[in-house]
Length: 291
Image 1: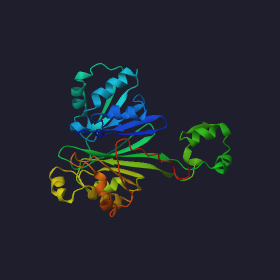
Image 2: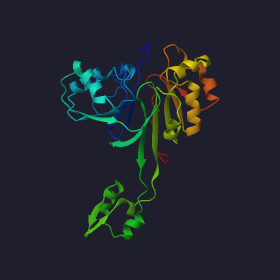
Image 3: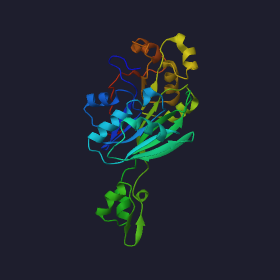
Image 4: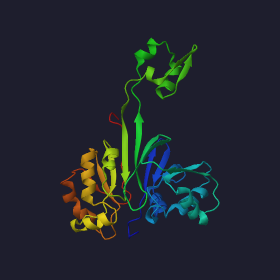
């Protein structure tokens, strides 16, 4: 539930002028306005599941998008039932100047792309259908000048090849792999909430630069409650982060009873030292290794 100085669940990622969002809990657009960012460039909204604290901010967000004179289609991805749930919420936002494109997840693991993002959805274990998401920004290999010269390719064709397009020259087709080195390490963020600590989470989060995960409870005596309601403790999340070998763990989605989550930081960091007790508005800029 929303508390003073704490809104409900949402994540926004920005890359190359394209924004994507995961979940849209109550207060999301207010939190977004506090950052100074616009809702207009949001191209994709993914939903983990349809409990109210993860989707109740959507009608207001859609109305704000409409008032910003958005006309480009908005893509939404989520578990089966997405279109029905969103259309029910849209009773109070029936007229929008842009179409909504729905993609419903039905498999245990699914992969798709949107703009610069490569996204993997993976089913987790909550008391209704629920998914986690890994977002990747892939990076091609370095342009090999010697290969391009050996092929006799003129300079005006180098840039399209470097950006991943194939080109035709003197009746022959040239593909990017012919002038690029091995793919370089990209960026990866994994987001997971409302679930038990099932093995697929560590598998999908493997090698993530940033792992954002629910830490519903910090109190050791609430382990049984976490199991009953299909949630995780901070310690469960830390063990997953350690197993996955992530760069950094952000804990989120705290129980309303967890007034001071930072009180448990030392205990959690004994399991995974690079743990952040995140708060609303937490931000991080990720860069490629050599930048």
